[in-house]
Image 1 (cartoon, one colour):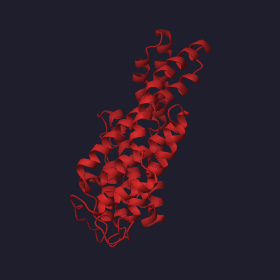
Image 2 (cartoon, rainbow, N blue to C red):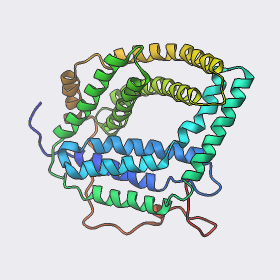
Image 3 (cartoon, one colour):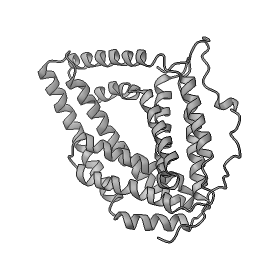
Length: 319
């Protein structure tokens, strides 16, 4: 690759990260809203923010690492709500015997309620304020004279990691390895998305295929979550647990084959070749990134960035 020179891409990526953090600060559930949908959207936004923060690991260093750690801490505080919300649908698709289904549905509902209680007192206002403060700190990163080379290298790192994990995990690797592949694929979706102006048609086509791989791996992971949940339930007999495991294994096999096919197409290039191709797009873009400048001082909190209000007058809480 050529030597890094001043580029509009680092400020563009910095602005995208700050926007994601501000959006996340506004996505906590409010009274009367669909809690499951809000939590799902919040988790997706935080995943995107984490992927964008990883772009700056070498360019910014410690501040980027601290930002990533804070994003991941926020994700952990949100909890397992999404996993528990999707399990009834995953279970219904398996069509187990009614007695087994009913026992698992009741257990899922019980665990979901336990999660609600565990997170009832989470300080949503404080967490939202932390995310807004993170956005302010990101906007102060001095990247105006930086080149795009460190960003491209970071995307190469995600690509290389996904390629290695896929080679080890597909088509019949352990669920943990497949989940690790999915994490890297998610990073690539968001990281390539921020470079979409460089060559919109090419980037969108690649992102669509990555999203298909992400979906196949996500469906596979949902089945793995159900498998672990069912295996740990004392309400089920050993015979019922075996029957559920057989149904899950049958459903996972075609998903693994589908993921292997998509992986083979998407990760055929060596990381060095992928990096050169990506650099050619970014350094010779169809459209230049919009101009972005960091603010000179922290901005006042806008009304749209205010933490969600609790109509009851108390502390807002997450479900």
